[in-house]
Length: 510
Image (cartoon, rainbow, N blue to C red):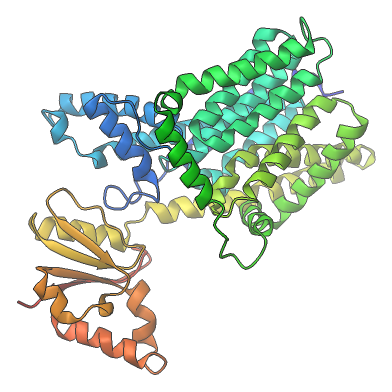
């Protein structure tokens, strides 16, 4: 039987420790939140923010885009309204037309960071069903988890869907305890909100369904509980993503196109499940990975032999099903693993607590030393990685220096061409911007003939050619020609305080 801490209560020391974990989570997620703004938002951030701001400006709440469901766009649109009102009070703009999208990113990111922090608290509340020590350690593990910390800095759907998945876990456990139809409907609604944030979040519905099937005392019956779960899921999804039905043909066309993209053969040279396992090993580090594996073993034993089989079923069934699902999709991003991470934190924490329990017969001093050692190897490596990430992100990059120079020195109307796929500066309205993989790929007369005024060369592209001219003689000669036929007006080299590629801003000779 779980410790008395499964009841939503704890002594003052534990409560203080939990709030310290939440505070640490907030610090790690809000630190360096403005990174890259406004010149270089994260990959796919504009997919959410551009539509959220458009909804605010037009009053049209049809996203006309169904790669993601609409719930997080609606949330960001509501936040954009608050940001606009605050900016208007400050005198930053006098109309909607005068408020550019880049002014809304920071507030949008703050919402993601807040949801990421709140997930730590909700995980603690859910994990109390295992024990207070398990709940506290799992909350700390999630608070410092590098993957969750990093993704909490962006206005993407992965952290919000993780929030709703963990909320579904908590409400599924409560539904089992309360055994009422309304409790199961509420758990289903949380799963529906997860699906309305990101489609794969709908897999969270397996948790209230399993809880309903394993609750013999469900009132009036387990069948009613199952129907309540499905009804809650369906209703919440449609309320949060109504244009899935209201614009059904458009939704179906885009969904089919998206599904086909995920079925395109992967270019990865190894099985996708192995790629994702490597992502997890990087996120957890080796000690954490071994501890989580031990937790999975403990969970499987408890799932079969008890006690508290339901809690272990929810901790294992969803992550296994979810991992299986994403491993069959041929587009791979480490952030897709986020909904699994809180469950791995519970399993890892449970393994540590189980190991400590086995040490009861060991002399007190040795037992305390073992407890401290297990805790440190579980927490310190990922915490160190998260701190390093934030510290690096807080530095002013060469991209930012180049952006500031361009805006300060070049007037609107300037035509600029960038090279590479990483340096994607989002300049204010009025600049003409284009991109090419390599500046050397075009004949030089092309630049002058098309009215391009400046080129931005990146060492991520030209670097290997200039460093090894004997290996790349043709490429080296091409870049020397580019440099010879332009005037270098600024160069931004990487340093300890300014990470990033070397960027050269080149003026095209007229």
